Image 1 (cartoon, rainbow, N blue to C red):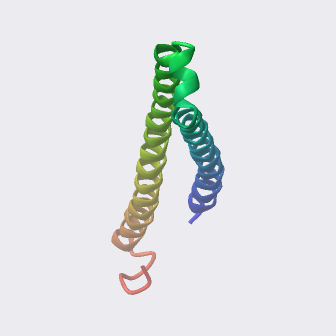
Image 2: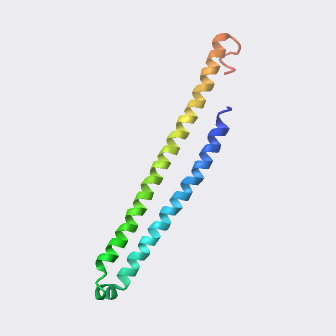
Length: 113
């Protein structure tokens, strides 16, 4: 039981960091969408100034950075979930192991466990 509060605290801390990363990803995707809307909304200006390649590269770079951040966030989420599950299972196994030892020693009964 003493292991659960640290698990909850760490999960809460990393959960906040995860939400911050997810918010950053959404902002980056919003910026990329804005770039695309600007380029498509003013396509005649883009064509006249022969900036199609430049606008395409800008959009590609924005999407690539959003994708990289999204993958980083997904890895962080996977690590958080794995650590939380492993820690929770370890806490349960620890209680059962200690309780089983106490039952074998005769200090408690199986019903008390």
